[in-house]
Image (cartoon, rainbow, N blue to C red):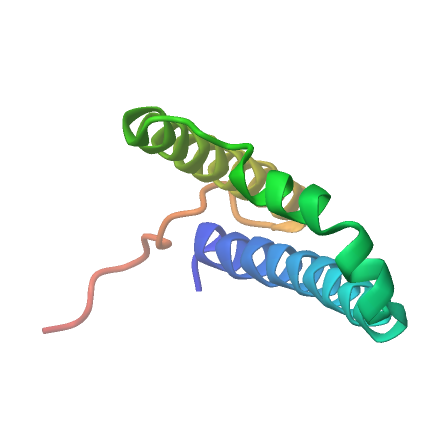
Length: 108
């Protein structure tokens, strides 16, 4: 198995683990807030909740450009992490290259 492929698997698993834990904590926090929220508290802050929902009045073009930039940054960070992990694996790898090893040709 090439080192780069193994580095991609390791980075994907670590990112998935970190994102999963963060999402789980966020969901747990939202659950606790919702569990403790009373009808009086919700009605008293109705205008605040409504304004929070309507505050982002940005044209769709800016959202699309922002999403493209964000995806490019995420992919760039992922590739940078894969490069770093591959180099780290290279320190422990006895081979000189990450590509397939060349040896004697098959006898046929």
